Image 1 (cartoon, one colour):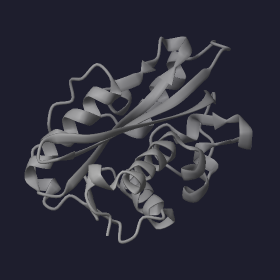
Image 2: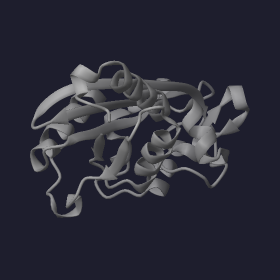
Image 3: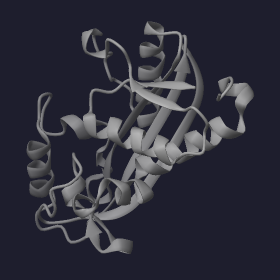
Image 4: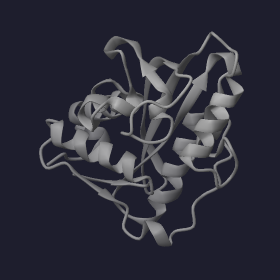
Length: 204
């Protein structure tokens, strides 16, 4: 079974590939959607992660007859009324870098002691413009006053994970996948594929 990933984020693709290697689904193949860079991206105007993930999966599924997976994920900070939320990737502006977004988050939390937060991820699977399944994953943590670690991407170096006493920026890809929001959502997705062959078609 082949699943095409509709995301230009190399970090996300790497996490899908790593999860596929650890799955027990025979002949599961994860690849970037062919021609993705030439396809105009859809407008992400949903008010929730689920809406955006679903809309992207439906949109990109028209460019292939295979299954397409698209995700929308981000950071919710309680003290900021769940911001940056669906605007996580463009928190500091439409063309903001990870560094820009991190700096703005640090500035907006200056002087705030309660720094609880969570990463949220929704993954939608679609085929020929019909949604087949939507998976969800979350992970709870706290926002650090400064970046720690150089691994991962996005807000990972600012996200402290209490059970491991380290930031996501200090975790290896394998460690992060075990506990992260995307890792949880991917496992939910793969379990559904393995257990509902009639929904997704043959897994061989």
